Image (cartoon, rainbow, N blue to C red; front, side, top):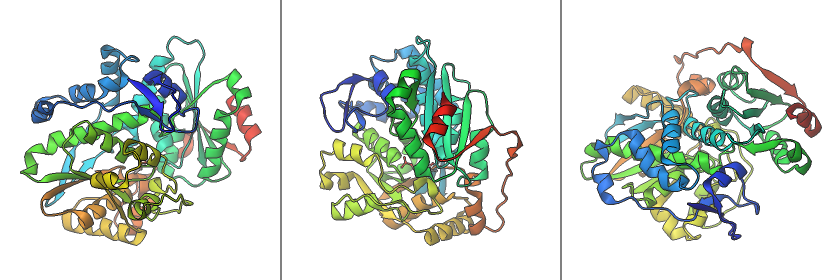
Amino acid sequence: MKYLSTRKNNEYISFKEAVINGLTKNGGLYVPERIPEIPSDFFEQIESYEDLDIAFTVLKPFVEGSLNDEQLKSILAETLNFNIPVVPVEKNIAALELYHGPTQAFKDVGARFMSRCLSHFNADEDKEVTIIVATSGDTGSAVANGFFKVPGVAVKILFPKGKVSAYQEFQMTSLGENIHAFEIDGTFDDCQKLVKKALNDENLRTKKSLSSANSINVARLLPQMLYYFFAYKQLKKDLKGKKMVVSVPSGNLGNVTAGLVAKRMGLPIDKFIAAHNINDTFYTYLNTGEYAKKTSVLTYSNAMDVGDPSNYERIDYFYNGDLESIKKDVAACRIDDEATLKEIQECQESNNYTLDPHGAVGKLALSELLKDDEYGVFLETAHPQKFATVMKKALPDFVEETADLKDCHKTHLANNYEAFVKEIC
Ligand SMILES: *Cc1c(COP(=O)(O)O)cnc(C)c1O
């Protein structure tokens, strides 16, 4: 499989190069040159396959030429070492819980897959790779954990001081060894700017082999397709003729993009819902046909506070910019903070099911848009414990697990590029 830029420039490269480069030379995102179809008898028998066999069948064509069968199997076995269960919540609605990985958010799957690919690709090099990543919380913890003790890789995480939850900070800073966290005097955007500047710094790049574990990397995007296959496998017997609809709490639209690719491979999901908080750029785009990026606004579901979702560019590419065909496959919904809190309360009372703020946005979107002939699944993208402050606002009885921050490894830095470069060299 070859990869090319969404802003076509005749650069066709391998999966390996796409993973190492992260970003294309012309500012676009890498996409596979084609989306392979899986024969329909695979879906007819899907219950009889092991998850690892499903994962292998789905991802094999995408890594062909860069990983052989044995390598892919071993990377998948290390990536998927936790449960991804479908849990019924109320009539015709179930949760797909993606938070049973080591850092309790769905980003574990992509981060683990990418780290192992990169370590494999770097095995013949004598130079260590340095991964730099900016985070507002979940990405940093997933990347830290995913790359922990991975040979040949050092990780530098930048997070905005005082703006991540105690639990997230603990997950990023407690590991040590090859993982180094920096708390920056500034915002997430400041962290992001430092990372981008370093990645584009020719001088620095002659000294260091730098890469990013940003969510735009194809090695983080592609394994996210697997959730949807696993969900279908578990739900198939309960669908009873109803169409399957999946609601995806969305920020950068990576998860929903992976779902759309899975659908195009033949997975029988009728429709996706991109469930947004008030950061509604994509929602507005679907309604008006105009894509206008915005400045992000802080909400209770802060992992989705994105004003210019990066994967919009991939969706636009896959559908040739045709709004009507995008709308056939994906609808969007916009849920504000007040409705999010109320949904957490109501779901607890009526179903005895604890939603996290992101899952609450996903479930409420489903309740608003689901039709009688449909069965809905929403993704529970993070464990409620990761967002304890919000949870306590919604549920007075919510008990926060305290994180012991005393063994943490972090360096405090001013928002200053030279100081940052000194630290990573
Ligand atoms: C990252 C994240 C999202 C948003 O996912 P995208 O792929 O960026 O749309 C949703 N929920 C949680 C908990 C996240 O960490």
